[in-house]
Structures are given as C-alpha cells and as structure tokens.
Length: 399
Image (cartoon, helix red, strand yellow):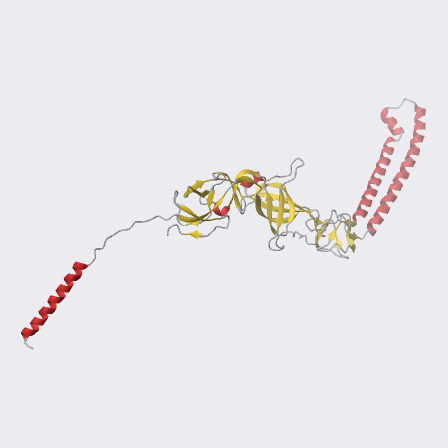
C-alpha cells in the first residue's frame, strides 16, 4: 500500500470521528436546575394537661439513730454476783427488769451500822430530854433574874440542839446506806434493746464503769437532710397537731413494697456541713417491731441508710407534669395551632417524679413529650400519637 492510500484512510477516519463528535454535542439534552426546599412538620407525641390539686411526696435520705441511748454504769462498787440472761447483746428488757446484781454484803453491814448509830442518837435524845426537864425545874428557882443567854445555858438548849443534829445526821446516814444497798441491783431504766455488754459474773466494777450500751425500744429517729426550699411544704408537730406522715424504706435490705411509717418530729437548728441542707428528725415508733403483731414488719437497724418519703402539704390549682418534660431554663414545649411554642413556666415544687407547675400552663394544653434534636419557636408540628410519660423516643426534626 502506497503512502497516498494510507493518507486517504487516515483522513476519512478523522472526518468520521469529527462528525460523530459534533453530532453528540449538538444532540445532548440541556441540563436545567429545578426544585425547592420543602419544610416537613416534625412528628411528635403530646400529652394533654389539666390543673388540679395534688399531694406531693418529698424524698430524703437519712440515717437511723436511737432516740434514747445510754451507757449503763453502776453507782456503787463491788463484785457482780448475778446477771440476767436478757442482759446480752441483742436482748430485750423492760423497764425495771434486773440486769446485774452487785454483792450486797458490805452494804447490808453498812446499813446495820447506820441503823445502830441512829438508835444510839435517839437514845441520847431521850436522855437529853430528861435533862431538859430537870433543867426547867431548876430554872423556876431563879425566876426571871437570869439574862436570855444564861437562860439558854441553864435550860441546856445547846446540848439539845447538838443531840437533835446527831439524830438528823444518823437518819441521813441510814437513808444513804439504804440507797447504796438498793443500788447494788442494777435495773433497766426503760424498755431497752441491749447493744453491748462489758461485764459478767465475777467482774469487779466501780462507780461510773461502762457496763454496756442500751437504746430505747419505744422510738428511733431518722435524721434526714432536705433542701431549704422545700421546708415550707412540710408540717412539724405544734400545739397538739401531728407532723407530716413519712414512709421509711430500706431498698437494699427490705423486700419490694415493704416500709415503716413515721412522722416528721423536729427541725434541727443547724445545716448539714457538707450539703448545706436542713436537718430534720423523723420519729418511728416501735422500731424493733417488739410489740407488733405482724411478723413480717421490718426492723430498723441503727446506723442504716434509709429513704424517707415525706408527705407534703396539698398543692391546689397546679399542673403535674413528668420531670422529663421540663426543658432547659424551666421551659416546656407546647403544641399550639400545630406549631411549637417554647413556654416559660413557674414550678412550685418538684418531687422525684413530677414537677408541679403553678404558672405557664392552662387546662387542655398539649405538652410535647418527644425529645427533638432541633428546637425552634414556631416550628411546624404534626402529632404522631397521643402519649403520656412514656413518650420518650427521639425523632429527627427534618426528613
């Protein structure tokens, strides 16, 4: 093939390629830009609210402590010769029960000596009274010629005063000896639970020694801390009125639904050091269930950490709303005319589950319970279903 033929073939190929390229570009459809951003209403769940009267429960944590707590001590010394079987850690005793008996031998002897001294003093008084009679007879001989001072001496008034003083002293000594003998028997000062015992039969004790620890059975206290802002909703006993009712629970030790009942007793006059909250005392009667007829009634343990549900005063004309629906800066999302309204509210009180709203919400208004990722006042809304406290799903604000 000569060069002319090759050149012709190349020219034809170039010509066909150029024509094909031109045809492609001339017949390509023209691209057009169209469309618009369409705002879609956010899908939400709502709950309708009503104003009513409610009785909130204020929760507090506290520690159990005894209302009566003593260290038992003797007032006389001696050897322990008898111990009550109930006087042992964990035992229960009633007021007046004998706990320990100190050897009374020395104190009986001392009492006999003091009684003998009293008899001697009474005999001396009788003798002196006889001498007084003789002195009065002698005084009649002198008539009124003696001065007042000499008259007292003649009638033996100083001697009579001395003997009478001896009688009083002897009687006081007998009473003291009787008291010491009585104190050799150590008795329970009140209905008590024994927490510790430090002596046994044969122990030598002296006045003031620590014999054991007793706490009262009639009442325990729960010392709890409460925010200062909530004190105005609580009632303390005053002028015969009772304090707020309280339910005590030990969630770690007691079965579900088990509780003890008590009453708000006192407001302690200082704040808790760490939290700066108010300290209150809650009275729980029969804490050891000693007199209870229900065998399943739980017992309070000293030092245990418990939860107290305190019944607050009734709130009138308020909206009760789940605390999860209170938004930032104490606002609530309300759907009004199918649009989002961010509403400022005034909260009278909060308890662990609810917020009680006094201002900002009216009857029949629909509160948005859905959590939204984008929140704009006036954003369009559409209802996906009526809900209550259960509407917690988070939905995207755009589709």
